[in-house]
Image 1 (cartoon, helix red, strand yellow):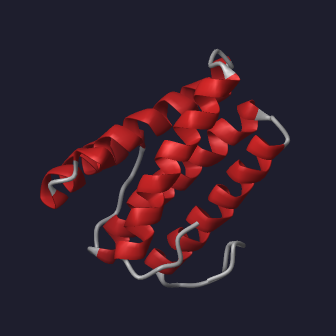
Image 2: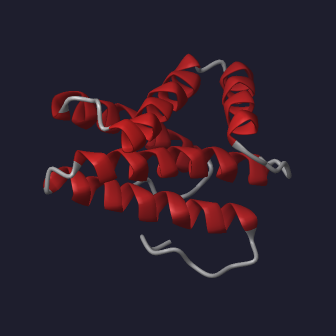
Image 3: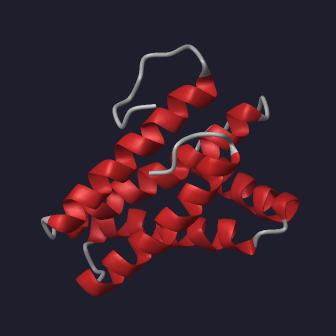
Amino acid sequence: MSSKIDATDNEPDKYAGMVLHYSHNAENYLKVKDYHKASEMMWGAMSCVLKTVAAKRNKSIDGHRALGKFAITLAKQEQDKEIFYSYSLANMLHQNFYESNLDYFLVDAVCRDVAKTIGRLMKKMGYSAP
């Protein structure tokens, strides 16, 4: 799967393409020190990886609250607290997009932590890791 969003009717593949797209953009924004944009891109990648997992399980996620609930459910089912922890960190990045209140060091570190969880989930589902 490429890093661009592929046109497909397959929901998991569509979301997985978005994960790669947003992860790639987050990395590029980190390189040019645009932490504001990197924050939102990493949030997008995390939300899409959760939607990928949900779609693989024939579930849909409608809205922010449902995304958080699914992150908790998935973490419990997988017995992997890092999933919810990374979701929480990504949510902090999402807030940073609107408020721009996080230090560049923190944004960089959080993006890298979230990316690790995203990579693990993508590999587990049989997709390329960002």
